Length: 389
Image 1: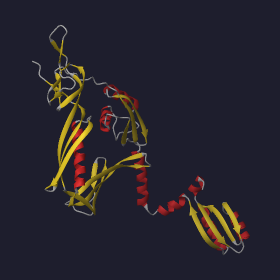
Image 2: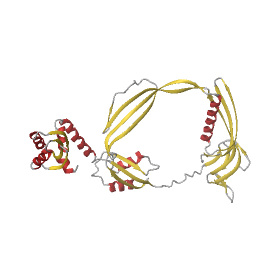
Image 3: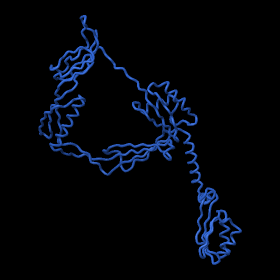
Image 4: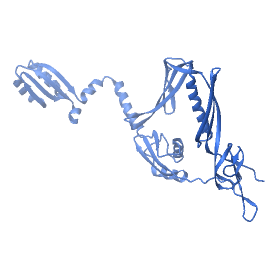
């Protein structure tokens, strides 16, 4: 249907008559026929919506039978809703609200940030005069960008583009080289017992040699270096000291533990946030006095994935569970103990290079006791500050 036909409206009829030729000749002089076809004793005719009464009158006068009638177009829609003022008013208000809402910035999306968090960039934009809820028409994006770049050293480039009610902020962070905080009143001491394999002293005086056994807290690299002319001077100690070490751990794993089993009961609480005001719906299915896990999902409402409305919907979901006692086998407990011991090792020394492992365990009194010794190579140099007098 062409646009003109839609606005004016179309009426299609299928009429049964014994004298179709006579009926056609009769109506052609009174109505604007858009489409006409004849099949045996049936006439299929299409006219404008405002001429339908004439077709029906001619059919009645000629003793013709109307077999079917189809009405299409805007006038048909208006006739359907003209007695529903509330529906029409609501539709118009909705259109006006969407149009009014599309004039504002309702969401800011940050792209290109690495070390800076989204909320930090949004705070910078706010100081530069750009924020959610403001009119798009009055925004001078170049002025906002220039103002932010002048005031914020952490950003080297920034651009703002609009997509409906969403503002896409593209940015690049400034690469600021942070100088190494050199301290002169620092010695390197041993973080663990070990046998020295290599000393890579970047600054300071080496106090140990290869093959020497050291104990925890012993001086490895001194902050003082000897001068050729005699005496010493303070330079500070920096570097790495690689040593063969042993790390021992004791882990206890109970054979009986508590396990969660979720039930079919779920509590759901809906809420709507509009312009900062939150309306909570009644909680469904359960009271709040139960053991549960808690999840929260929130999202902004939008039209056609482009126009973001100032409305957020959220769902708080609580899943009920029961706790019951379960048992591990000795093999399962041993695997858990090994994993725990390794996690502790690499938490203390992330660069530990494992060479050998000695372990033993025993089971009794409802628990597994695991003892292990990791042997390997690591950097045992640890900075230790001292006071200058």
